[in-house]
Length: 378
Image (tube, rainbow, N blue to C red; front, side):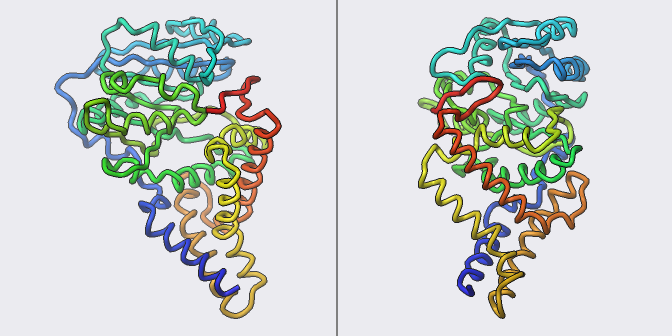
């Protein structure tokens, strides 16, 4: 038990000091207003893939229409086989709407919708592309600040992780941890460092430099990916043919908000089950390793602290305290009491069960199921 406690403390020492200080939740876009403004504001093409988003598409388009961007920008909504009034509401809001076709073999649904949008605007004169979801609302200066950062630092990709809804009981318990775990897996500071291998993006808001994107073959090389945002980040950070590696930047934000509601645990379960096993590359050995690692990092500390003896109890309590310290900044960012961090072991156990559920769904032939459609296994 003492060795188990030492291993848990060592693991938390690495997480606190050795993963880009992800837990401080300070890699965000608050400093965007201090960046120099470009002498010329490039044209931007906004593409929104949308399927059955009647509840949110209007607010999304109104927020984009209200942008204070000094340059020109156009908005295209790809109505991806919606069964509700998504397309009609988008047209009523003044957006250009493209009626999407059935998903092509080998493509995930969202990426194929985006590709249809790209094909439709291929002849237009725009230097930047903004991919944003139909449930995302933007502050009036959102596009301006995205472009400002891209131009100031000559970035090929800029992505903002939308502030997720945190209103229902399920959201308050599960959503801050979701963002915490995402940053633990993909530390933004590492992702933003040119020489690091890590690459992360948040699919709800991604600005791309068109020339760099097309030089890397566009979406074709990642067309079957379920976790398309991080795949896109990896594509843009890699070197283009006969060219240098790309430069990317991803951060948290208060300028971009997700209106996607998760009123109960079932909706969060569906969100996690769609991608969790795909993140592990459908590998049973990686799944087993993840179970063991999660047990060591999140479950062993409270068990040792509550039921261990002597040194094992002390080491378990120390690791549990480190866990609370690490999670508290994310809770505060969502306006929640830092004391909730003491329950992170239970939340982590829940996410671990959801990961196993994702694997079970894949083994039953229902992996990646989303909006009535099983996605690609690539």
